[in-house]
Length: 508
Image (tube, rainbow, N blue to C red; front, side):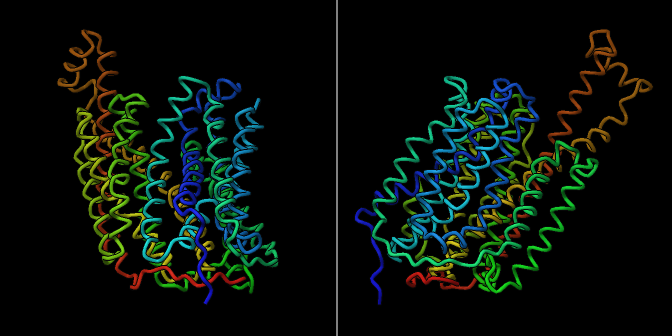
């Protein structure tokens, strides 16, 4: 039997892998609050600046499912090191960009090389840790996944205000160089069997077109008013046709570029479904709460960040305990407890109101952190548990791709439900506010200090606020029931949940 590889310094290897992943996940959100500044400096509109986010997301969505193919071709360590260094180089070029076109090109490259980094980190951590300690490694990675997106907007806003927007990219340079040197040095003795798999050009082209078009639709749909836009209609049709061809081709090709046959594994299918739906609902919360705080409650972006940040406290504090003791329990029970806690916090938010104070918002975020701490590690372990070692990178890439796509879907659907719901409630609340109503006329006179037109404007603003609040409460009530439903889904998985650790084989 082959002796499993162990790096000279396991802790240092873990730090290197985690830092690179933290850097990559951080960059998915760090530019969000800097878009107005970037738009002003590069002389483009705010709408055009949103392509800084979209270009990164599209490229990453395309490259994620290719992780399995790329690891077979180059090996995990070599691919991880190359992606990290290319990410650093692309970050530097983003920082020195003098035009929006140049920035978008290098953001796209940044996203493309970022895609495989997270799945390979999962696979490498599982391969270098002994079975008894793999839960700890996955718990640490889960903490990074939670904390980095929270830190992104806060750090991005602080850097932009105190320095300049290029530094949100330049900070990647020392982190990425350190991480790549550490990983390359610590894991250079890891033997990896590579091969030259046939390139599935049909699968590759349809993946790029289908997923790229779909990501653009999801990112731009709300801004373009969805199917009232010819651009969205045409892009959706292109995406649907390309994805249909991709699915049929990949399921029938003998050596597909994306191995969809991984779904033959029961735990991988169940765990991925729970991960995608749970993350989509979690992403909806992460998107909607700060948006609501800024638009309805009157918080600044910085204070909205502070109010939502407590969600990261318990995942950080509980990482050690979840990693050490979780594997001694039925992981389905932990995941179900996670969904119960997150569902409960959603029901709590469904009772929020416009005058709610900072403390209550922050405390619900803190409580949700308990659910988050129990979510990622058990669900990750379950979905990877019945994969062979040589399937883990491909499985991790595929599940992460679907999770990312789920987040994009949830962002679009949640924003649409919130705004459309607000419009409907505004119509219902305003239907009795007419100049022909004596009560309405008196209210307009009083609020407008004798000017009924000013009073009408004030009333309309109040109705708009209340409409958005009612819609916010309804969305969170629905999210609460989604989490309750996921408590049943996770029990479709079947023990044992210890990831297999066979020596890596060359192919599938």
